[in-house]
Image (cartoon, rainbow, N blue to C red; front, side, top):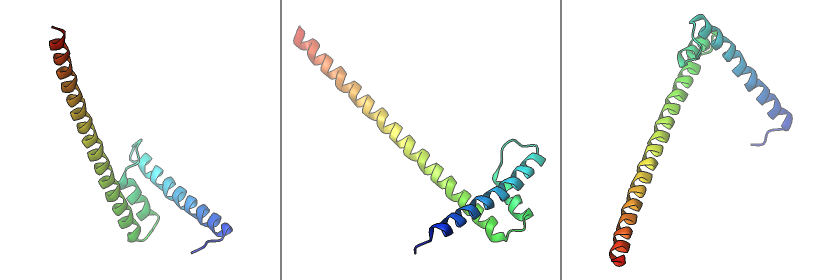
Length: 108
């Protein structure tokens, strides 16, 4: 589906205002809780306070779950890669030690 440029700009502006609206309420709730960090619970409470339908809270919960899963998968990939690099380094070290033994043997 094609979207006219002015419609795209309007849609982007609406999205920005939506995020700003929720962010202001979320920041207020976080400040009331005397927290310097905004947590998921603050976003949930902001959506409820601003009288958004419960579907929005459920959608936020769903996105949070997806983000957690993505973060876990990223960490698993990172850890797997680190283990692979350690194994490769150990193999390289063994290879160099064997090479040195052969060179030392040939020198005598």
